Length: 119
Length: 146
Length: 250
Image (cartoon, rainbow over all chains, first blue to last red; front, top):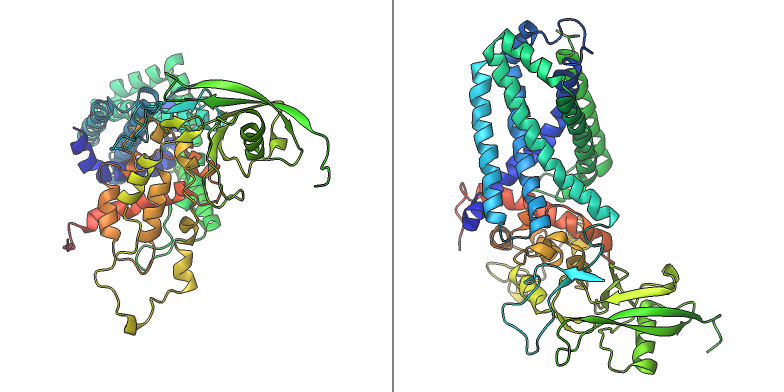
């Protein structure tokens, strides 16, 4: 398992890099509006009503942005959680924990693709 | 005084001629301030994982129709979700600041014919991009434009 | 020698370990009358000269260029010849470098470091050496600037003592070894970057580094190994990607 992880490490690192860069760039705007502003009624009327939200996120760019917000944080998250696990627990279970975390990120990314296509 | 690190840390393949004591770290190795900040930085990984998974919910809700979407927004208004998303916002800012600070020195002096711009320029570009993208998203998702 | 000021009594709590007698390391305290200008090393040498000749510790140049005297002082990896006692209070703890097996007292086993060091092939690799008649290798100041910083390492191993990944992942190549490999990868005379990048992606993987930056915080020569490691990640990935396109000669 460790050998498999080593083989995929360059791709994982690229995805992690994209996750930390693009994910971080996109997250504040998304979090302040979609997850906090709209639910708490802080946005103008109808800003993220279903009609308007669907219009935004069913556009090609909207789908891409939402996919980026789903998938890229998953890879950043998986990689850093793995690093935390090594720091706290040592390296013996690293292969297992790393594989599990990257599997979550991979499955989440695939589900994300399916989800944004379904919008 | 000291606690063990991994018993094999820095151990040579071929053992020396005398018995060695296992590697150790100082008691405050993992708790000294800079290390705590670094561990917090790693711990944002857990937050990012959850943010991604919750964003999956957002996409599925949009695909599910107006009642599902409205129900999602209602559930996001619950204290648990609000606290989580505020934590996520703080994490994203913390990650961004630390990552941008360390980004320039992670660029090699040259890749083929390409050289990176000076750190000050890189910082300016990164923060401008961050601010710009955030403003655009606030405008679009915030109902200002289009 | 002229009197340089009042002596100050400090207590040094020093790690002791004799493999012939001790099961585990222990500490021993020494009262040392310290001169105001002393470094930690001066106090250790005083202990060995005047109080306890059985104390073992490494040192050599006394001017922070040989890299021999690295130890953990009050929990932080330091060059003891360069660390002024004025930074400390009445009690100073001196321990061997963290993350290394301990041979005796303050002396650590270095062979593990030497293995990682040699693994990165720290020499100029060229397919065919230039004949002497062809002259020397020429390098512009700009080409030198691309790697000079990373060549300043004195192999003091403070970075290994500070690194959380070294503490937990025995296979990790570690800051100094990666910085040195990177030094050669960035050297315009070198043609061995692909070879080294394969090593960087191997068992000792540079990607294990989680950018704690502790190595650069403790480096006494401002090598900034964290910069080297993270630059190496990008270059190793580019090398990996281009390896599918460009055929490599072994």
